[in-house]
Structure formats: C-alpha cells, structure tokens
Amino acid sequence: MSIGRWLNRTLEVWRETTSPDGAGGQTSLWVQAGEVRAKVDQPSAADRMLAQQAGSKHTHTVYLLPSADVQRGDQLRGDGQTLTVHAALQPSGPRYLRADCELIQRQKGT
Image (cartoon, rainbow, N blue to C red; front, side, top):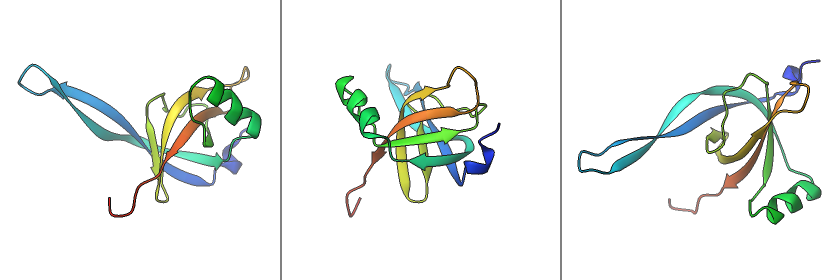
C-alpha cells in the first residue's frame, strides 16, 4: 500500500555543499537538491521525549515516499517553513520514509 495519497504538500530539499574558498578554507552554500511530496505532522509526546533523551530536537515528523532523496542535515522548505532533518528512517517494510525534523523559526526582521 502506497502512502502517496496522504502526501499533501510539496517541499523543496536543500542540501549544504562546501567548496574551497581559495585561501585554504571552505565556504558553505545551500543548494536546492529537488522537490518531494510530503505530509508534515507533529510528533507524539513519546517521540519528542526520545529525541530529548538523545540530545536532539524533534518538532515535526515528515512522511515521504520511500524513494525520496532526503538525508540527515538537509533542509525541507515550503509554505513559509524551514525544517532541518535530524534523521531519515525507513520501517522494515519500505512503505515510506520518515524524517524527524526541527522547525527553524525566523525572528521578525530577518
């Protein structure tokens, strides 16, 4: 059974890349790596507590097609939100990809 019918949003996948800066260091740049269909949910209290115990923040759970190219460290952007991916997991039967994310909230004026 596919979860495609539940994926009600399109999010942009942004990935950080590095390149030499010409002075012996590196510069970082975020580049768009694609788009994915997704369903964004609030995590359960148990999921949030497990993340806290591991020293991570888990404010949103994003469900994606199992073939989605989403990795730890990516950003998912859409509908005025930016979510940082802390983990990307598949269940034992690859029906979906679950990304545990943290919402990055912008301050006014930035």
